[in-house]
Length: 183
Image 1 (cartoon, rainbow, N blue to C red):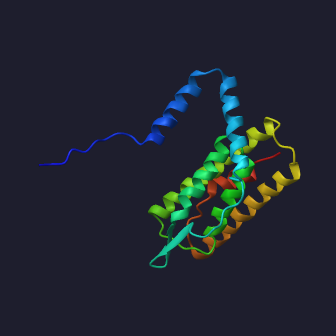
Image 2: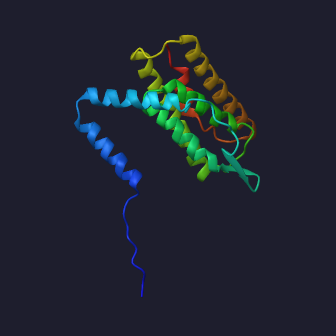
Image 3: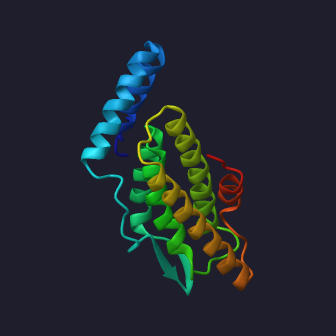
């Protein structure tokens, strides 16, 4: 006799759906208060501090593959830029990009897909940075310029590294976004 398997969504997915629906139907001031509270919470938990690069990528037959720690680090970066802490998310993403330097990977597959997602994350983080600037939430302009410079250094380093071994540069959108970003 086959076992009966109950299929119900995980509680986290349900709660996220409820929060999204609530915020979508509330006045804009509610969303603003929600994101301000989320920013405060993330700031208290030091989510903005750069992560360790250990475990972001691992090796399989001499080629890099996404590591166990990468999912959590990307989730942290997405949380930061998602609540309007774009500059804080850049510090997290710089660690990921820098960790790719010196690695080799197959030209298609999981690693390429993951790096394409990181490239998209960087573009989203830059958009969040622009909104952070426009919203007047930046008090230390030299430190945000340094964050952008660090990202540019990491992306440029990745470009030269992949060019050196004949790989496809994974952060093309990010490089273009940085190049044309004026503030």
